[in-house]
Amino acid sequence: MSEELQNVQKKFHDEVVTIKTLQEAEQLKVKYLGRTGIVSELMKVIPKLPVGDRASYGKQINSLKDEISRILTEHIDKLSIGKKPAGKREVFDPTLPGKMYNPGKKHPITQTIEDIKDVFSRLGFEVAYGPEVELEYYNFDALNIPSDHPSRTDFDTFYIKDDILLRSQTSTVQIRIMEKQKPPIRIIAPGIVYRPDTVDARHSFMFHQVEGLLVDEGVSFADLKGTLNQFIKSYFGKNIEMRLRPSFFPFTEPSAEVDISCSLCSGKGCSVCSYSGWVEILGAGMVDPNVFEAVHYDAEKYTGFAFGLGVERVTMLKYGINDIRLFYENDLRFLSQF
Image 1: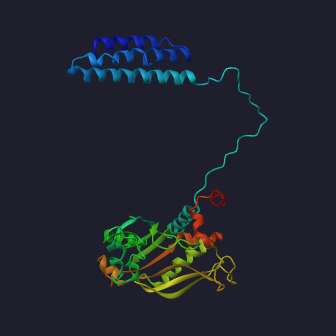
Image 2 (image 1 turned 60 degrees about the vertical axis):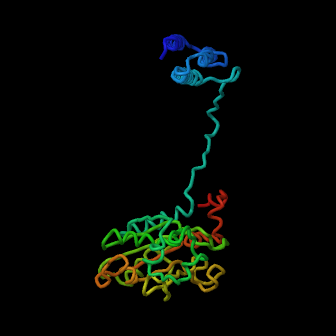
Image 3 (image 1 turned 90 degrees about the horizontal axis):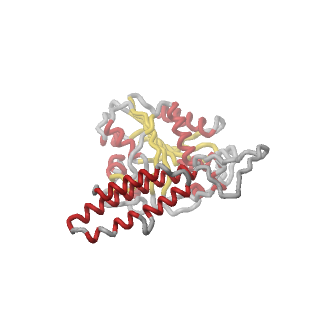
C-alpha cells in the first residue's frame, strides 16, 4: 500500500477508537466514505496516474474502503443495540398472557411415509432410495415389462429422451439394489413417481409410492400375506380386514390386488368403496424369475415378494380425504388438520 494510503489508514484507526456514540460513528462514516469524503477524493487521483499504476492503486483504495466500511459497520451495529426512538420507552406488563406461537406440522404425505417406514422398520426392512430420472432399462426392461406393453408409450410415461424418463414406479429401486447386493434383501423404497395422468379428484401426474422387496431362500406367498396383514393392521387398525384377489403384473408371478375393508363404513358399503365394503390399496406378488435373471440371481435358490402402494391413496383412506389435489394446494386450512 502506498505511503499516502497508509497514512489515511492509520488516521482512520486512530479516530475510530475514540468513537463513543452512534452519532460520532455516522459522522466518521460520512468523513471517510461520503460522496465528498476522503476515499472519494483519493479515487479522483487515479486518472492522473501513469496507465501502468492505475490498476494497482485502484485495488489498494478499494481494499482500504472495504476495511473502513467493515469496521464502521461493526461499530454502528454495536452502538445501535438497545437504542429506542427518542421520547419512547418500553412498557412491560407482567399480567399480560404470553405470546402464542403456532408450531409447524409435517405435511400429511410426509407423516404417512414416516408411519409406513416405522412399521416396516420394526419388521426388519431397510429404507432405500433411487433416482427420479431413470433409464428405460430400470423402469421397464429389467422388470420384465415387454417393449410392446402399453405403459411404455408416451401416453403413460414422461420421456426425456429415447431411453431416459421420469420413473413411473419406485420398482426401479429394487433392481438397483439387487444389482449391488446379494440376498438376503429386505427393503422399502419410498419416493416420487410421475405419470401423464389427467389431474382430477383421484389422479395426479406426480404422486408418491412405497415399493417393498424381500428376497431370501424359502420365501413364500404366505410370508407376503403375513407381512402385508401386519402392516395393514398396524397402520389402519386391528379391526381392518384384508383380502387378496388374483391379478397380473409383469414383474411378479403369481400376483394379487390387495383390498382392505372400508374404514369409513366398516365394510357396510358407502360411496368411497362403491358400496362393496372393500377398497383396493396396493398390488403385490412373488418376484418373477425373469427379474431375478436380469440381476443374475439364481431363481432356483432364491424366491422373494414385492409390493407397491400409493401414499396419497393410503392417506386419503385413513383420514377420509376425497380429493388428492388438496395435498398439493398448500391450503393451511386443510394442512393444519393433520
